[in-house]
Each structure stands twice: as structure tokens, then as C-alpha cells.
Image 1 (cartoon, rainbow over the protein chains, first blue to last red):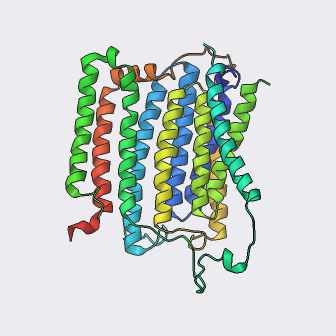
Image 2: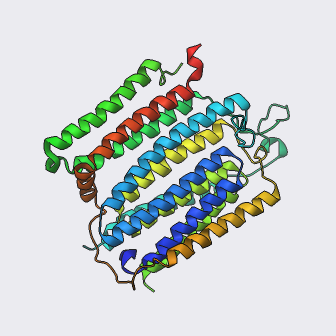
Image 3: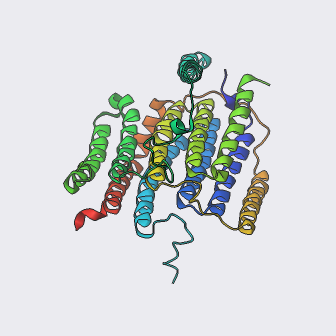
Length: 106
Length: 120
Length: 168
């Protein structure tokens, strides 16, 4: 088993991660459950991760992978605070439906 | 640099793990005796019809522990590349890591002081 | 077609399918489980891209920690397909349409920047722990320390948010 950087053109990775990103965007627009929306944001972050890693290993440069490392760190912090927020919202309105959460709309 | 050899062990391990779970599930499905009645298949067998969903929401106490687990899990990830390069990085790397851990220790002290991990 | 190409196509199809199932599952728990599978397949892509360290980190952080937290939350709030809110059909259609339109626009924009004819690059060792660690601790010291402050704030924030009832 050789590595795919030697036999798969990089455009395929570009296409794959673009498609994944668009699925994430679609999910954010499509769903009303705030948890699913957070998950779709994770999906978008991972599309970007995949693209960064592919560029990094095609170019033979480690910096892209360091960036991915930091993206993972930020994602972990984001998820922790985001889910804590969601749970405290759920305690107040007993729902995670984003259409109910329009009280800051004034 | 031959990459193919490195993954055979992982692949075999994955296969064994997956195969064990799959065979156990299929085997228990076929080996055990099956005498199903409507009463046996009900969620509770105490004569009262069950209502609603079997999944009950569980306590918020677990939630904070899970959040803090995510934090410290990612923190430990930072130590792998540091530990591998420990000698090359020398004292600079050591001070960097001390600063990092020091900042996180402030957070840990706050968590302990606030009693976030206390299991009442 | 080499074996790595076959693996790539299978992994890519699996990634996209599981991502689609995340969006279209009715039950939030199924969405979480599909997302875990999606993340595993992305870790497989990382292995195929010769970024072994990141593949392992990806499994530990995403599948091991973040998705467990998501699953926890879904179970904590007792979400299931009966309580799942849905948008009206027209809005759903508009959402799918705009997602597809975004895809077409990005592809059209990227097409003009497609790189020169493909040459297979040399296998390098950039994905190894040693190289990433050297880069991280030599050149990216400041982001590393800032990450610790981010963690501190995230820790305090989540404790304050999730432990509100202790003050009274």
C-alpha cells in the first residue's frame, strides 16, 4: 500500500473537501436543532482540516499540519463552551430549537 | 521508507477487534434460546404498561465532567510532540511547556475551588 | 488503478455519504453516530496522506472526546426523532439549493486556480511526530501559549455556564 499522494491528484482532495464543506453549510441551513447545527460546523471545520493536510503533504511542508493541530484545539474549546451554552439555554426554555431562541432579536 | 509494512499490524488488530465483536453478536443471537412473549419484550415487567420513551435524561453532573475531560484530553495531546523532541528543544521547550501547564493549572485550581468535580 | 486509489475512492465515498446522513437523519443520536463514522474516515484520509500523527490525534480528539460530548448532550437533553423540530418544506428546498449553489460557485472559482499538470510528489516525513513537534515548538511558540489561555477561558466559561445553580 503506497500513499495516496503518489497516485491521487490533489484536485480530488480539493473537490472532496469542498463537497464536505457544502454539506456542512446545507446542514446549518436545513436543520433547526442547535446541536445538529454545531455538528455541521464541526463538519465544515473538518473539511478545512482535510484540505490543509492534503496541501501540507503534497507540498512537503509541516506548517499546514501544525495549523490543523491548532484548529482541533480551537474546535475542542468551541464545542465545550457551545454545548455548555446549549445546556443552559435548554434549562431556561426546555428546547434546542433555534427558532425559539429569538429573544435577542430586538 | 516502506509504508505498507507499518499498517499490517494495525489492520490485523482492527480485523481481530471487529471480528470478535461481530462473531460474539451473531453467536449470542443464534446460541441463546428464544421464547418471546409480549410480556417479556415489554420494557418493564411489573404489570404496569410502560409509558413514553425508554431513554431518560440523566444528571447534569456527568456533563461538566465530560466537558473538562475534553479540555484536558486535548491538553495532553500537546505533550506527545513535546516529549518526542524533548532533548532537541532543550530548556526553551521546557519553559514553554511550564508556562502552558501553569496556565492550565490556574484553570484546574479554579475548577477545584468551584467544586466542579465534586460528586455530591 | 492502484490500491491506494481504490482506497481513496472508497474512503471519499464513505466520508461524503456519512456526512450526508449526518444532515438528513431524523434522529439526533443517529446524526452523532454518523458523524463519528465520518470522522473515522477522515482519519483514514490523513493516514493515506502520510500524516499519521494527525490521524491519531484526530481519532483521540474528535471521535474520542468531542463526539462523546455531543452524545452526552443529546442524551442529557433527551432529544429524539419525536421532539425534533423541522423546517417547512420550502425552506428545506431552499437550503439544499443554496448549498448546491455554493458548491458550484466554489468549484467555478477554484477551477481557474487548478495547479499545473500533476506530478507525483516525493514522499516526505513531514507528518511524523518529530517534525510536527519541531515546527510547533520552534516556530509556533506564541500560538501554543495562546492556546493555553484559550483553554483557560474555555474551562472557566464552561464551568460558569454549566454550574450555575451552585451560587444560590
